[in-house]
Image (cartoon, rainbow, N blue to C red; front, side, top):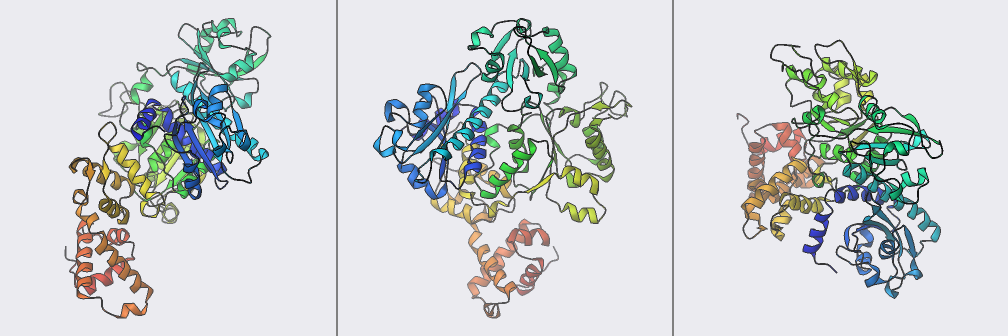
Length: 604
């Protein structure tokens, strides 16, 4: 067993691969959830670095050694899913009695390697169950899912490692180009092959990478490097036929040009809200059952280019969710561009979205500007707070989405654009449509499916979120802990500002705490007042239900506590009745009754 500090160091050693693998683990677990499985990621030494387990079976999995820091290489455990996968460098299923150790005979394990671009093993993905009803037939199905997930992670890693190289993506069947089993070939600026994936070896009938790597692309395909450059620059989404030199077999291909710092579209991504993403480890979605369902549904539909509409209160993590969908997509190597429709002044939003040519209007930049829509070409356009977009621009946006082309301000030339759109709002768009504030046709264009993000106070993984966010806020520093009393206060609080508010509270408390321990004294007063506020909520619900208890007056102490909590919440919400009622989880009528009962004056 490896100690927690060493596990953390090993996790950090995986870099960006870990959050990507974790996202795919969540997707895999969603497909086999309820079957008594644990999904596990282990490093090349067989050390377990991440797990997702059936909550009802966590004790059994820990007893079987399927927990963080456990060592599952063959030297320690003999024949087993993870260790044997490492030993054989390929996918394996080890079913019950096939395990070497007697205490592992209840397990059925399917493991597959996650490969680097040169065929080496980066990590192992495993799905294990202690379910006595598990059969070899079920395990074969599980093995197929695990192998597919491992391929997806390997594919992302290839494209990420060689994002600064030319990429040729091909397959013998055109419908497979851009999908899981496509062949990938990385090429340098001189037309030399740098790396190929396993599918490329299979497609070309090569037994080893040495027969391809280091060779000129023209030696193996009937086109020169210049043709690839032209395709990548001017027809990046077009599938074109190619033939190999050895047998004249026809393949279908797409070419991708390198992501270089000196290219204009990459330089533009450095602008606020463009393609600059938060570190992947900050884009978690969590373990809440509703969020897991959202993620599984969102990934499946977004992969088919169905537009997604995210609906949730402010601070529920809509942008982090959108980035998670982007990171798991086939176009994850392309930009993720955010447009906050509520934050950009109405006078500027048109130029921000569509861009403008030189001299388009007074005050415009001399060289013109590429709009957010064109910056997202081929990648993901995230329209945050779409409900706040002016009606006039809704019309233009609808035209862009329908015609797949954009006309910058001051120009008459339409530029083709490949769009993958995710929208988000906290507003009731259907009500806005009835009020004439939002175009119905645009709504149905953006709403391939609506995914509802729950409030933080309603999430089942609140405790895990608190710990996760605390680790993120103190990454690279001393490990900060939360004492029991402070943790209880955080769990009891209603979090009207949701995840955004929780992150800010943890950041402040981490800065204020001593000895790397957050105590109740480090928390804001509004959180320390949770218990009086809970009393307020309790009596409010009792009154609104019209129960006999509502007829009797509370004690003087409770009345004072209720009044104090009510005043504090009104002050915090700047005497906004709607926001205060929402924060307390009660109706406006109930809040007014409370104000009247305590004779609170509203002349503020």
